[in-house]
Structures are given as structure tokens and as C-alpha cells.
View 1 (cartoon, rainbow, N blue to C red):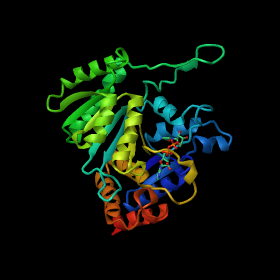
View 2: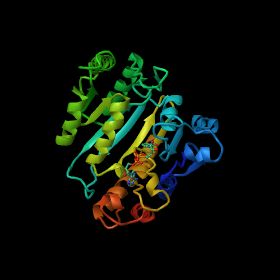
View 3: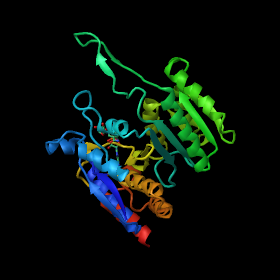
Length: 335
Ligand SMILES: NC(=O)c1ccc[n+]([C@@H]2O[C@H](COP(=O)([O-])OP(=O)(O)OC[C@H]3O[C@@H](n4cnc5c(N)ncnc54)[C@H](O)[C@@H]3O)[C@@H](O)[C@H]2O)c1
């Protein structure tokens, strides 16, 4: 029996995490979910957006899975997602983008994974106005040698353990010569220790174009926080949308799994959105727990349902409800 912290999340979070719990339970792996509230849902109950008991629960259990959390845009409390990653030192954002035949996209045979530095860069949380009238703002981009070394090493180790052949470092070192310059220099140094893995680097704007033109040429991508955030949504678009993009946030001891997408508030409570990104995040969690076979069964069940094309949510071109596609996935698992 595993104990895992569960943050249902805001907006569509409760519906998709419920679907994920049902699918994981269908595999027979015994998990006790310790449910805690964060974000808007915690604020509505008179708590802070990131209550101490949430961090305590995750630190105790070492593994958590969460729905998306709403962050007010341009005002209000700081992103709880960013705070969680920084507080728990979850430095590696792992975001696979894998083609599911039958999903609505022009691309086939995509199998890449974005490794995003999760704790520093432009999301370091150092920003302020520099004049009294608040007409000039600045956000400070912090890139450290230590932070760069550990994420690039993580990317190469991930490549080795997942039988991948190439690591591409994404940067803007032509303009941001200090911060991206340091990141690229560190990546080149680390790459020398992994001669069996091909290494290359790409400037971020060119990379955005290359990913749209020739996504099949890429394998493991490693980059800084903001570039990774933006490009991982682009990668989700390549495989048919955010409804199919799972992720993991990994630290030295703790791992938190979540879909890449946000809380899609306009669809909250409608039994309408695609739960697959959250379900696939659950499959990544099972793999992390050592339950590889159960994780694979979930991925295959999702792939089979999408290929069949009979029970698809609106974003995949169908009319099925969240609960219907969840039942179809469970049916594939239990046979
Ligand atoms: N990790 C997180 O918790 C996280 C990540 C991104 C955004 N957010 C937050 O989510 C809120 C909404 O942000 P946004 O609108 O930019 O992004 P979003 O990901 O919620 O939505 C983007 C688009 O994708 C669609 N979409 C998202 N998930 C879907 C799903 N499972 N099935 C079908 N369609 C889906 C939405 O309807 C919308 O059209 C904001 O408060 C933002 O801060 C949270």
C-alpha cells in the first residue's frame, strides 16, 4: 500500500483527479490518497493558498499528484505551482510529448520529452517596480552553475535510463550572454561525460520553428524555466493538445505529478474536459513508485481508446463526457 498526497486542484481539477484515482484503482495497485487543498480551493476555506499542511503531507509521503491550480493573472497571490516547485526543490520538470494515433494532429511519430529547469530563471520570484509611479518594472532572471549542472545531468541520466539517443540544449546565449551563456557552457561540459548520447544546442526562437517543422527529429530537450514552460505547451499542441500532456516535477527525494494544462475555469463542473493528461500523469507516478507494468497498462488503455475513436472528448474531436472516456479507459484496463 502506497500513501500519496492528492491535491484535487481548482476549476476542472476535482473532475480530472477523480477520473485519475478511478483509473489507478482499476490497475489493482493499492494507493491511499491523502487529500489536501491548495490554491483557490484553500483560499475559499479561509486558508492561505499554500497551507503548511500541504507541504507537510508531501514531505511525509514523498510523492504527490495534483490537479491544476488557478493563479490570478497580473495581481493577487503568487503561483502556488511555482511556490511548490521551489519550496520542495522539485528542480526537474519532465514533460513527455508522445503521439497517440487517432488524436487530432497533423503530426505522427512524435516521441520527445522536455526537461525543464523548474526552480530558477525568470520564475525566481524577484520582480518589482523600480520607480515610485510604477511605470517601470523588472523581473530578475537567476541562473546558477549548480542549478544548470543538476538539470543538464538529469536530462542526460534520463536519456540513458530511457534508452534515448540525443539531448538538445535550448537557450538564447547569443543575446543573454551571461545567464544563457552559463547554461550552455555547463551543458557542453556535462555532455562530454556522456559520449554515447548525441548532444546539440539550439537557439530558442529557431527551436520553436524547428519543433513545428520537424518535431520527429527531437528526443530529449533541456532548457531553462520560461523557455521550457512555453515550449512544452507547443509540444502538447503537436500531439493533439493539452488534454494529452502529462508531467512530473522531480527533486532529490520528492516527486509531484500533474497535467501540464491549467484549471480551464470555463469548463469547471461540466463533465466535459479530457482527463487523459491527468490519468497519464498518474501512470508516470506509478512508474516512479516502481509499478511499471501498471503504468504501461494505463498508457496502452488510453492509446487504445483514442485509436478506437468512439469515446473522445471535445478536444479530441468527439462528444464524450469526462466520465464516459474515463469508463472506456477503465474498461480497457479490466478487460
Ligand atoms: N500547473 C498548473 O496548475 C497550471 C498550469 C497552467 C495554468 N494554470 C492556471 O490555470 C488557469 C487557466 O489558465 P489558461 O487558460 O492559460 O490555461 P489552461 O491550460 O487552463 O487552458 C488553455 C486551453 O486549453 C483547454 N484545456 C485545458 N485543459 C484541458 C483539458 N483537460 N481538456 C480539454 N481542454 C483543456 C482550455 O479550455 C483552454 O482553451 C490560470 O489561473 C493559470 O494560472 C495552472
